Length: 316
Length: 292
Image (cartoon, rainbow over all chains, first blue to last red; front, side, top):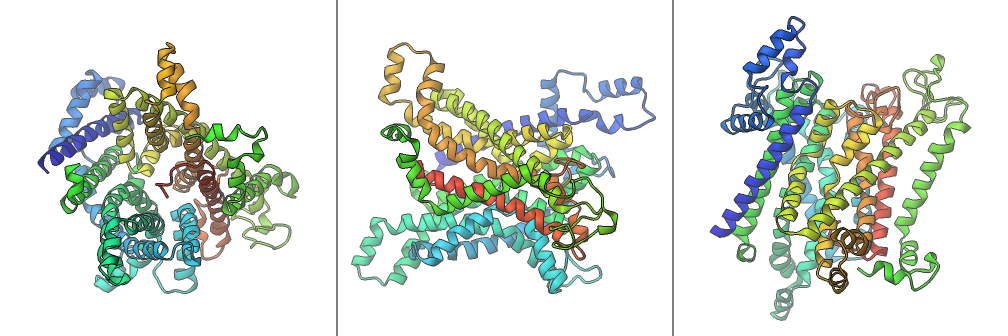
């Protein structure tokens, strides 16, 4: 286990390093680069700019600038927002919870429904249900999330009037019920793609587990089919799903950004788009690095979780 | 992967096992049909309509579909939605197709070199793949298109930069498994150059998975373009694309829902078609079925 942990950790560190290099490269192709904030100020002369550049150390070789930047990133000094001067990490922190709430609830929906569809598809292989689920998953993967959101708003908010058109809560009403009411539609919209992915993988994993020897043994012992399915098959099929949950993180974050835009949800996605609109590059870069780190951490945690549950992985 | 050799048994490609299997895949045929209809509509549609995509008919603003001469209705400026939809389709389909070409090219190059060389070069290249996959693609797409000027060609390149990794992974795995085969060893003994072995001997044997992956990449590229154009950082008006037609649609959702529903349906139709075709090709070309 220790060997596995160490090698997996080392891998993540290497990945972080490459991710930070890509991030630094993007920072430098932004219009105006790290100097963008000052270039926009009409009171600045060329002379001032040059002096500031030297002061900020931006006249040094690129690789030294990179080390400096990466070191500040590591220490938690992510710079300040151009808009109001507050620290980037604090700004991200303010919006993190809303995104987490949306991602968490939509993942819960995706896991619950996707697992059920996947298992049923595997146990009733080539049935009408399985066939429809397969086509349904492929169509669901093809629907643009924002369009699904717009159609959802049109039907459930504008036509039927059941659900609010957006925002996280009604101003002046801080009750949990009010939050939940606002959460329903965006989390369903965000979960669509993941229900599809989850159900396809779950179907494959269940079929894999069904064909294993231990299922034959369980049958020979005379266990009921239901017991075999619940205790032996599903347990084993869910294992690779932990890895999948980690792998799905970037696409959930992508979906969250789009969903937040449609539903004016005050999360990291909205923040990213607003910051882009204001050319607030420190926050844009901060979010880019923050989400990438989140993804790397998520994958690391998923792999460790699998290794903890399944000795075959850590011994391999 | 004896995809190509199996096909050479019959001289006519439509007699081949691959072609027959593809033809028996109903969803794939449906996909081909839908794409054909969409493409024909986008290519010839604008010539058959009474209005151009730029003609402004102020008296007919916000006409719902199937009223007067506007069979898909009009937008807030009174422009014909059908004409705009077809012109937008040209852009969206072209961006999707060329993004796929670029990302397949990048992915294949990286995958072949990583798989054949192995060692630290291979490991480094594959870590680069992992690193690119760690960024949520939309954040990378938006940051890049905000940084670079979003012309259609630049959008195409940006989408390719953020979508070559899947192809690279697939090709790398394929090449790594082919590397130790006899025909490759024979090539080495004949003194062929590494480049020749990589691209003339090994690569043709990995064509099946590449075709499947690139079909699915077209689907993803069309979606990517739609996402960033919807958010205002993709194709810029007055040039229409399916994504940017939806950009202003949300504010008219209550009064003119067709503005949002119709372009989105076109995107869904195109993307679904490519996903169906990719699925059919995967079955027909016998590509391992360990993805969705």
